[in-house]
Image 1 (tube, rainbow, N blue to C red):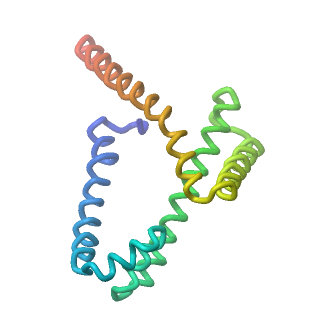
Image 2 (image 1 turned 45 degrees about the vertical axis):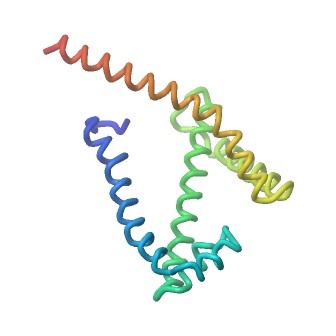
Length: 164
């Protein structure tokens, strides 16, 4: 949890703000999608990876929206990869909160090489399948983490009641 934040602030920042942003996004672009009709939908379905760009191409400033989408996707992938290399560096440094740059570079190279091998071996489908297979054990770990969070919050409430 963010240091110095209350549970209320954390929940607001992590759950409510993104949900509100998603609501606005889907309200705007969902309405646009309905207005486009079946002609553009059939064109977009032909090429799923480029469907967003096909749809945006039919709107004013669609090229600008497409550019913004690409920049946001790049930002997402870069920050995700950076976080992953940092965590892997920490884990292989016995929990050191400042892993060496060399370790982070090694982990970044391994991640990149793995993605490239999967892409060349079977294309996007293989990469997606590998992601799903790798995510399943993580989902189980997340269930345990949620149970642990609930237990921790209950213990904290007991501790606060004991102190008061």
